[in-house]
Image (cartoon, rainbow, N blue to C red; front, side):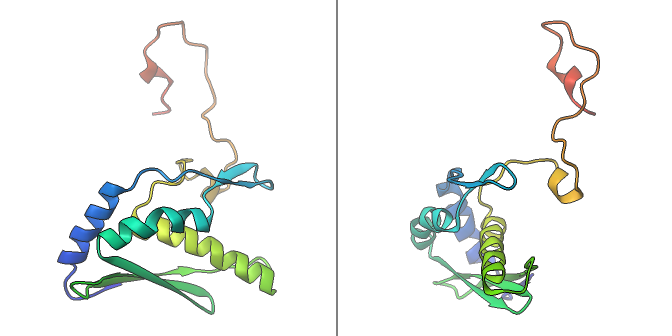
Length: 151
């Protein structure tokens, strides 16, 4: 991440923005993974007005193998930016466009602190497909719920 020398004003504006935001509904289906996700257009629709109210704007620049996302504060000129690696499955326009759109969604979610995704405890990133811990012996009804936790 790179940033302006001071981020005091942009930090306050981001705090205000995050206070205005609610969870963004997952409106699209991924039939390959049988999952839902929030589309880029839905994310943009939800963040546009609250960002403007807080004096924040952003820009995203695909540059070869990465996407640069920059968040800017209009009044102070302060900024923060980060790069997100783009890894298309194939080297054709459709795959590259899809990878850019994917990167844009996830980069915006991360840098703005958006509430979009369910937490899968990093199972997808580590290649684990089972999202629930294996159950041991059945607990009697009324047993302490903490007994079911994996730790």
